[in-house]
Amino acid sequence: MFADLTLFGHCGHRIAASAEGPDGGMPVLLAHGGGQTRWSWKSIANLLAEHGFRVIALDLRGHGDSAWATDGAYAMADFAGDLAAIASAMDRKPALVGASLGGLAGILAEGEHGPNLFASLTLVDVTPQLDAGGVARVIGFMAAHAGEGFASPDEAARVISEYIPNRPSRRASPGLARYLRQKADGRYYWHWDPAFVTGVMRQDEDQSEDRGYGKVELSEAARRLTLPVHLVRGGSSDLVSPEAVAHFRELVPHAEYSNIADATHMVVGDQNDLFGETVVDFLIRTHARKGGE
Image 1 (cartoon, rainbow, N blue to C red):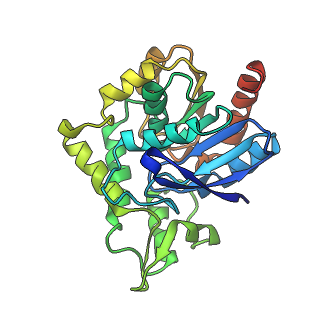
Image 2 (cartoon, rainbow, N blue to C red; image 1 turned 135 degrees about the horizontal axis):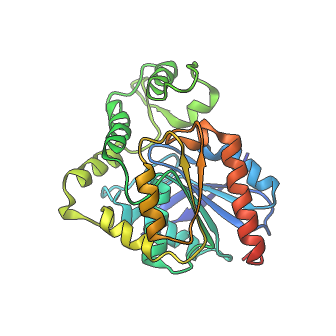
């Protein structure tokens, strides 16, 4: 699928990435959601590359093959700093497509380290105003098996099916192996640092040590966005409500908005083809107008 790369985020933090598409194409950074890896974007990356974009999919810090933060630096400001460092080091200003965690980090990076750090910003089912119940459900799923892992990939697949009941149940696929690590005890563990989840839970409980994760800071960062912005919501999302969309469009009046029917917060997995068409259309229109940046 990709050519593997090593990039460097904030303070030289090692970030694993993979690239696809023509070297001279408009660069597009893909930043996944919490608990995922760069392989979440496989089909989308292929589609963008087919349309001439130079696609660079990232493993965010503590995820996939990227370095873990030994000091527990998993605040939103840390993820935003990585994106800012990577974008600033590129020869051409990249477009950013960020899902959930990746999108929030993109808002903060552009708002704090911009303007014009990115050529455009596509936010996948995420805004500064998120439903607390939906957030708790996501964090609960990630925390539930972080410590003890799974006896087999099939057990992990069953847990995923229970978490996403709208999709057909299936046994472990070869692709699931990219999200799991088998340790010396023979059990399988998610391919990310458990300290990421405990850090998120701690920040959620204690905002006194706020490093750019709180709603106010993200809203302020969103209000500063002047670059082209595209918000893509899952029509059945339990994290981004219609009210949250209205709030975001007040903060960023020039933003485009797409609602993907029959998709949950996991928009890319639920409606991959429709999501891909929507994103490609926005990127082609936006960057053709701007001369490709």
